Image (cartoon, rainbow, N blue to C red; front, side):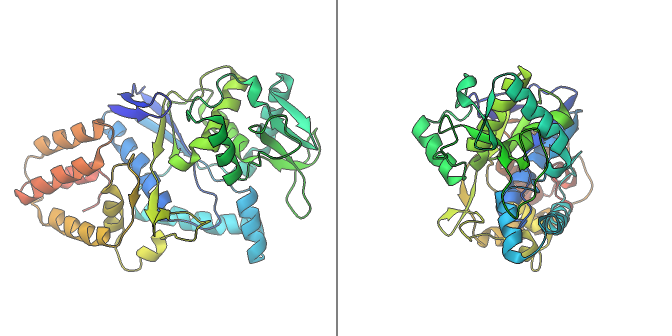
Length: 373
């Protein structure tokens, strides 16, 4: 199997061990599940299915960010407790993922479950001279990590601008360097806080994922995934702090899902141009939605439009009309080849289309792609 590795900027061999340990950044559960989420998790679902088909086991951890600026603001707007909001939206997300026939994660840990681990991680960073206390908070010192920026390959000015977009606040006067990022946020009025040796506060966003990945999967994981919008600052910061603290490579392979666009911009909560899976499920069966999202290659940004659902309806009907018996080994071989070529799912779908049109059985190939006929 060959997959594009973001860190190396090339399609390379993915040397899968017997048990493949994967960490995929999950949702911040204040409004789930939009099609950008669904496209991302379907990609890693197909990857797991092929790895299991090859004889590997997979252990995929997908976190829940149940405390950060976004969910706290959303809970405040709605007048509900942030954990109640997280519970409700996580339940909806899990229901959507099950409907789309994605494999359940081996673990779905919540950030609030890891406060002791996070405090231990931050203490280790401070002890090693990788972090500093300032203004009541604790920051990671990006100048203490020589490879900062090498994952994304972005220039400093671009990183500063992206940090500002993600509210990492490069203009924070408590920072030594504009690219430094918060590990422990000083307590603010009206927000949840936990005690620490640096004073009451809550964890920063990036340290939550590092700590959960290390706790659930160990110091070096085989593949780290997520949406392309997380490359900077989230994944860059996650990698830097993890490798600085452990002294070991954090992830052997970095894989990013391209963004889904709608109405001329990337699909995002902040822009209000979201299309939700639970809304589409009112009029379309889940396998149609899944096929529509699988019609685009995971590394290519693409616009969502409703005609994709019409095309997926036709495709599903074609597949279901194919015979249920017969030798499917040739088709399975071709689908496997396509998946092993940088997870070329659209080409695999076309192979199944051609087999169905020729009157051959496609059930096993559809199953490998996660489509229940």
